[in-house]
Image 1 (cartoon, rainbow, N blue to C red):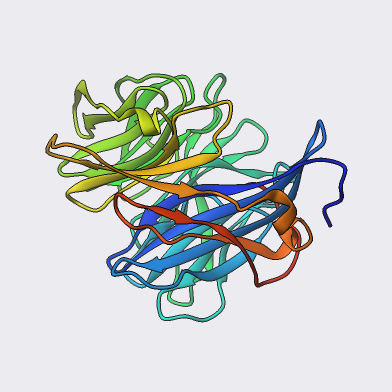
Image 2: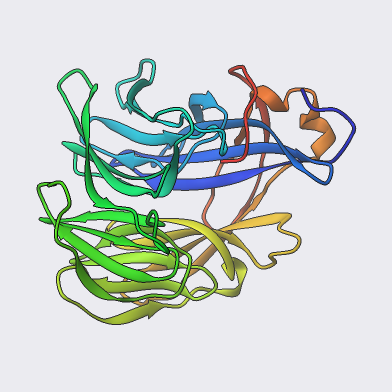
Length: 324
């Protein structure tokens, strides 16, 4: 449980959109020179408005990915190894573990699904790009190593499915793809080079888009590469950490300051280049208000376009966790 040894911080981790709801992750941690994870949650809120719901709690969660029937999300033990990938049905019910990594191995940042396979980076040994087929019961039918890890690219930062191609970008910015369905040791096609540190590779129209931290949202043809287009962002989210795309607009979470992100913003950026719209989110009433229950709490927000909404902690779920 948290103590008075250091300040408690909480906030939003990642966000993704299903046809009917937004799914987002939250984190609560404490820092006394060394960050101590206190809790993590996977939350959902209807696109038409309503109360947020905690659908999973644990140590920490990566970005959710949508299938026709539910959300797939990586659950991490924060570099302790033995991470997993879980499935959360839209219809409700308890999450199901569909991939369990060996002790000592951790999930990379990149993950995607086409509804039949889950594609993910696994860091352990030299690292790799893996595919695990999901059977009718939601169980792991066994991994296939599509691309073995090699220095200096042990595991991609982002992975995405685009038709019959699997595209991925490494931390150094190298953009590659392989043909689907997945095969062991697949031939790799190089598409180009992006800025280092890409995040959140998703389809946008017929192209692929990702968050280029500090540079906006980048876009490229996932089949044959070519020039990278850039979607600029407004100053309220100049320091961004996640986004979602609903087919017509990007929704970007960030702040105007990397050193003191007290106020977080959710900006809507039209894909066709129209004027962005900025909404604001107050992250916490105060750390002290949440300290005693931080280990089991999620951060709840209501987002009203163009207005300010308070955010705070709710006492639901149980267990200790960490930053998403």
